[in-house]
Image (cartoon, rainbow, N blue to C red):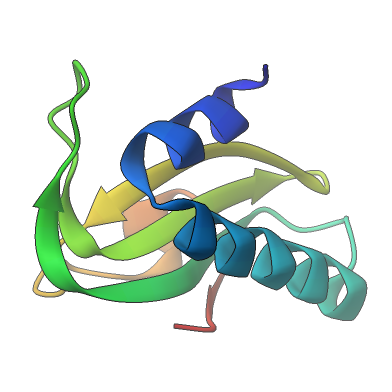
Amino acid sequence: MSHTIKRITERLTPAEASIVNQRINDCLSTVGVHEDIALFALDIGEARQANCSSKSNGSKVVVIIRNGRPVTAMLRAANQRVSPMSMRVDRVIRMD
């Protein structure tokens, strides 16, 4: 199981995970694979604490995509700063 799939599975319901996976595919088919992207894929509507060592929490599901591959997924609070620099990517895309 890849790191990203593991993170999505442990943090989201199956229905939420399905939406996130579809949005990853939609993003890649639109943008391509040559940029590092922070994809805001879903707003789950409530802050949620992930049961993991990183203590990820928030209502926004963010997937980091590098070279066309999702490399991690996280929960992020709506009030956290969002910019390519803060996310360490070339581009931020909102589909949430």
